[in-house]
Image (cartoon, rainbow, N blue to C red; front, side, top):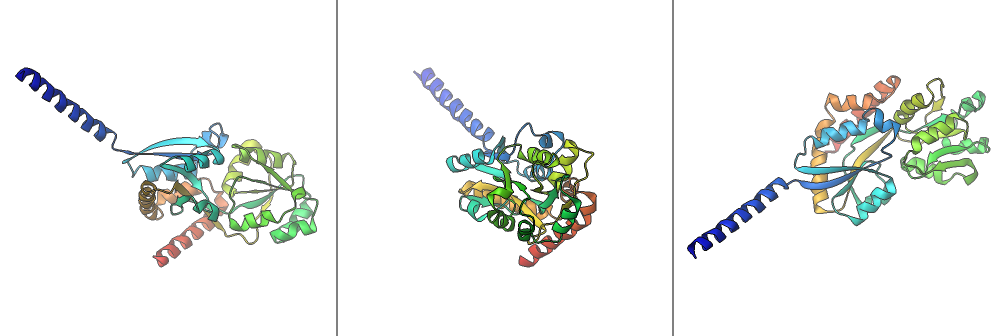
Length: 290
């Protein structure tokens, strides 16, 4: 009896110890974080983007999290946000609608605002005149022109307002997980006349698609010079704690050269001084608010 009792107690002790060790080994808090896009995208396959570099800088400092990375369309990722716990989306632009269901970090990455890129088949004189027009005046003067943008992407509140006022006949849109490549390729082939795109995306992808072409472009009126992207998570206590830690890390990263360099690597060199100036203005404004 004593031996049996001893063995029973020993078994209980070993079981409790094993459970404790399992808990210690699995003490990292799991989070699934979605990147919007296509795993086969040329852009994602060739080199790390600014967002990927900054994301790495952040989570190198958060070893207490067990992060599972997934790639999906925005709709798929957003459906998981609503149905599951501990879900985040990377590189997301903040909108009033998205804030209803998501907690947003401080700006993760900074983007020079979208520009208007012209098909090589548009007459040079028309392009020259358009460059001096406000965005909402372009189609009053040139009602037959067409403009392309992706309907499932965010371009900032000001541009979205402009888009909502366009006639359907002037708009060319596409919903696709690899839409950036397709839209640029179609612009270069003359499928439509103008494309709204971020400079860091166009400068990189256009060279891959057709390095021989020189594409004219212009800034867009009534659009702030910088747009911010964020890490956004579903609303929960765990997410709020994660976002708080991310914000603390970002506040420090803004002042580090590696953070600035991660942005400059995909910005045309002619725009480096402008970007640095705008970033410093943002940092100074942030410090003044605090």
